[in-house]
Length: 159
Image 1 (cartoon, one colour):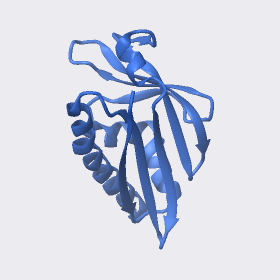
Image 2 (cartoon, one colour):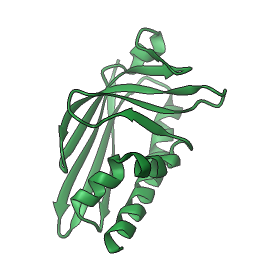
Image 3 (cartoon, one colour):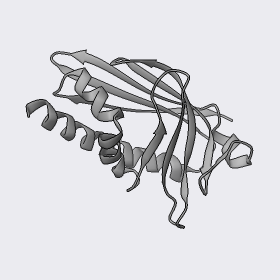
């Protein structure tokens, strides 16, 4: 498996604490991640060592999603997720070929205060040999999700 890193960045006119909590708190997470999939949410927490399930309706009336562990968590600075598998019909799957195809990949969020703003960098590892549609989906949806997050954070910072 040949890994490729996709990177997305934004600068948000809000304190890093606001960006952190807006991105990761349950209610606001549900809002900005709707850019990916309406009804998205997570079960678990963002503490180092925790298991976290990213869930949403799969279109067939079941729950689907991804299973990860929080490999590193430094509040207001950095979060690293390592994917373990997928969730099919609400059940963790770490053994199917599809689950194994992305197990071990990482998704990292870096938060930095810079010139009175917060710089947010997202880095995602994907299998470079996988379906190009998957990579294109991230390239289309991450900027939209970050724009939504930015608007939410800046609204929060001025209220």
